[in-house]
Image (cartoon, rainbow, N blue to C red; front, side, top):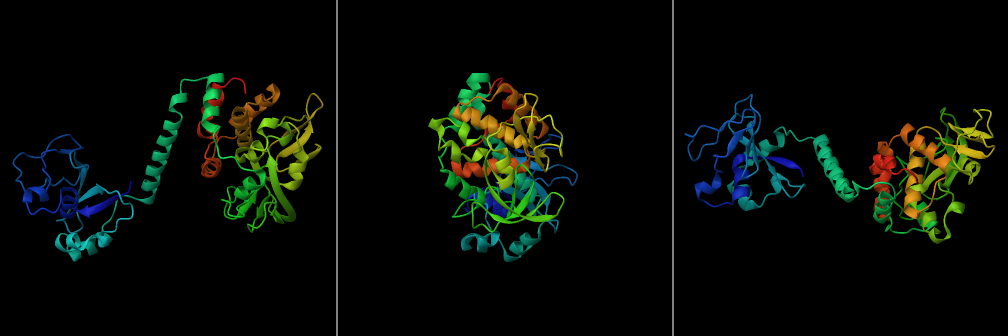
Length: 371
């Protein structure tokens, strides 16, 4: 909730009404406590006096009225208090005439515009973040003592009632076309999850093409499409098409990288780029120790891919092969959740009405021994 600095008389009027009784125009100061040393103001204060804080003291709090004495105003004679208000868009100049004219002189309103406020945008963002963190804590509160299959079952209940999307609807949301949100558009730019290529999108196609910028800064023509990080062919029939349109495991990719990955499992090839079957931007395709073709994801998005796989395993009750799971757990540690991944999770919730819990709570990965 945003906080606004109001002249003391105005705040008292707002909190206690506009009665002419002087007792209602000033709060009782008997509960004022100096937070710096815990002492109360002198008892001999008169009924119309308010304890003036020492310049070196912390703010004073009136417990009953939730008032904070911030000290003198810029003229040295105007006590200010911070008041919680239900309307974040409150403007002192928009107060009703009966209050503005009788209680707040015009010169005070003019001063209010120039008074410094100790509430910054970063403070407001911190308050918002704290509220959001508290919401997430509440969401997962009943899962804190669960482990393994019980935790999986609890998470499946949590994520399982999402709004289903068709694959086409999901792509619209990813690319921001036909009214879609543009979940993976960052400043109008798409980034290939596998190669790091970037493409400026004009928001007209779910399969955009144009000029890509490579990691070295050079440019070349290319086209993007949408990757199922959990291959569609490996979805259970009962979960297709719902799983095909689940954005939590869909990512924009350069079409060539998407084709190279195909339906190959994630793994660790024995080759070293540039001596693999295919490679770009840190991702590569090659044969593992068992001579099977596997796909290795670059640093920077491998954690995103891993957490998407854990989500899919829980959401749709599917198993991850042990060797793949071991690698995904390492990717999860190599590439922790960052601000972009967290924001993507928030955006997907707006569309699907569910979240990837392993983005919110990475520690849940260690509480499940077998996906």
